Length: 235
Image (tube, rainbow, N blue to C red):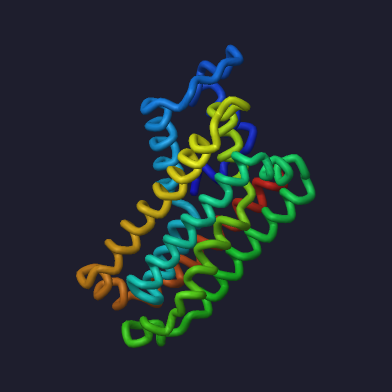
C-alpha cells in the first residue's frame, strides 16, 4: 500500500494537520459518526492504494483461484487488525522507537518481497488452469499475513492515525471499534479484489497469460522491495 510505504515523518505531519484538528489545541472529542467516517475514509484509501499487498492478493488468486485469494485477503486483514490493536495498546511504539527493530523488520519485509518475486520469475509454463488447486490455504494465508507483518510502516500509519483520536479518556470499546473498522475495511476491499478477479470471466483470460502475469507480479514485488530498501537508506 502506498500510504504504508510513505515516509513516517510525512505521514505523521499529514494526519496531524488533517485527521483531527482539535488535537492541535490539546483536546480530543469522544467518537462520533463523523470521526468514525473519517477513520473509514482514511483506512479505505490506505487499503485501495496499489502496493505489495495488492500484488500478493492478485498473485495468490491467480495461483490458487478464488479460495486462495479470499484466504489471502482474510489473513491480510487480520494482520492489519493486529497492527491496529498494537498501535492502540501502545506496543507498536516500541517498533517505531527502536531504529534497529524498525530497520530489521523493514529489511525482512523487503527480503520477503524479493523472495516472492524470485519465485514468480522462476515460474514455468505449468502455472496454468490445470494447476490452480495446488495452492494451499496455508501458503495463501502466510503470504497475506507476512506482507503486512513484515512492513513496520503499517504500525507507523496506525500510530499516526490513532494518536489523533485516542486519549486516556477513550474507552476500550471505542478503541476496539477503531481497530475492527481498519481490519474489516481491509478484508472487505481485498475480498472484493479476489472475488472479482477469480470470476470465470476474468480467470479464463488471466490463466491464458498466467506465465507472463506471474512474472509481471514478480517484477512489481521486487521493485517495491527495492523501494522499501531505498526508503530505509534515505530515512
